[in-house]
Image (cartoon, one colour):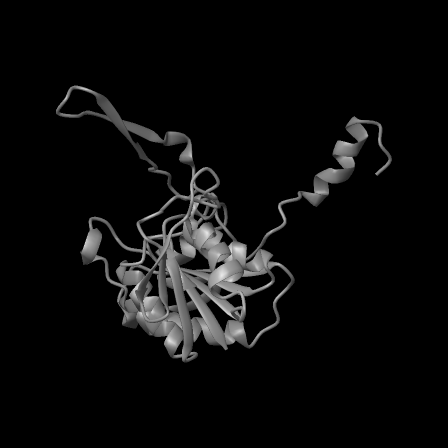
Length: 257
């Protein structure tokens, strides 16, 4: 099995090193193609208005001056064009990718790009409890549970253009309650806060703060499961069509559905 490893935290991120270790327990044919700098929140953005640069960052390791989606495209169409990967692993992200984080996440977007190419792909993220930050974030749960999550998925059937989003809870490996397969949740991001500051030259600048809290009825989604100490697995797919609305929308235009 040939494995492509990527992320959105950058080529030097601790979580990428963790994912490389996990990948090498599954195969000895592992190629890393990751952004040269952090691209968190890049989503599925592409670099179209400037050239991309690729540099070697070690044996079978490449850094790309672009987004996670750029990295997967560069890997499939250039670096690995003569021998495509059988599996794409993206992460391990520093921080959760739960609920609507999925839409913003470069980690998840790299896995989606793999799925669009017909390659089995998994996004993996490590939740952490604040005030942990930077190098203090522990990836111990991802290290311990990563292979345990991946092996059943690799042995299962995959729907066309589907992929998986995995989140490891903010706990110790011994405290993890197990694995739960759950749907994507929803936070209330209506309370988004804009934090204003002034730089030393007197110009204003801003930070976006997303303080949303889970509000999913039934306490049954990835948000609640991760908070309760479970490793979460959410099957996702690339098609965004809302099929239930096709007929209703057709009738707005007097079209027979």
